[in-house]
Length: 187
Image (cartoon, rainbow, N blue to C red):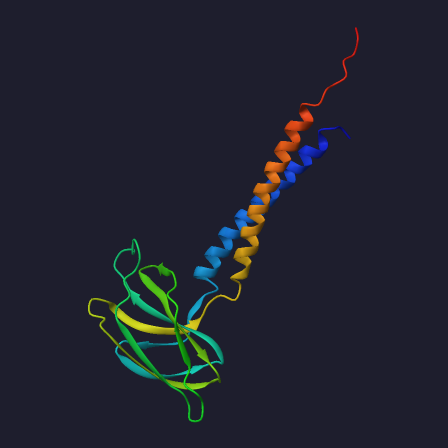
């Protein structure tokens, strides 16, 4: 095994780490936004409107959902929205926390997380919605959940960062090992 085998192996390992981290990060961003995010898993309520939805215990996302013409450019305007959640008898009212998320648009179908509900007990909840939604096409509030694999985005981002550091160290090692004094053969 030659003196240059170590640095070459380190460079190959760093490039492999970069590729896995980069491809994994892009894949997870796409999957979390378009496949694993079930923003309307528990149902939708027209604005204005009312209905009953069966909601599980835990976190439930509340998303503004509408159709758009074209693709939203810089930020999607969220109208002034109101909603009321009436729990089943004997169950405490859910806690509501504002939590504005990123806008996702697929084929003119747009949704953006606006609130997160903290539901203490599974049950059928009465939902009433209202808001100034003039100009929006088929506006509604969608109740669902985000991706449970968001942590993988951080794992692949960390691998990508590790690959950059590893590549820098491997290139430095390769450059240093190439500059070492070599023995000259006398003629």
